[in-house]
Length: 159
Image (cartoon, rainbow, N blue to C red):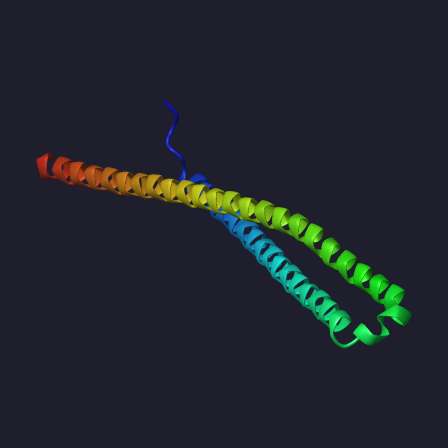
């Protein structure tokens, strides 16, 4: 059996657990920020895709309606422009896949950071309970010694 901890050791133990909790809190906050940034990137990419789809739709509509009379003359240019719009849309769609994967990884890192924080807090609580119990036990021990001294002094004959 290990000897009981001194009050100084108990204080150090509590301080170490508090530092571990603080570190875990900072890591969880960083992971939360990273997940928020990843979510913002996904939202921005989705918005960009919507803009490019609308531009492609507007281009196709204009080619059929407004530019129809000039297509024989400018048809090649209209086709090149459509290909450029389509390529930009396609690049954004592929980038969205990467952004979504980054978001999943950030959310997983956040989940793990929150678990680590919960474990650190549980360890801190356990140490606090152990130290509190040790302090109470020391207090009871002091009371018992004081009672014994009173009993011993009451039993001694007065000279």
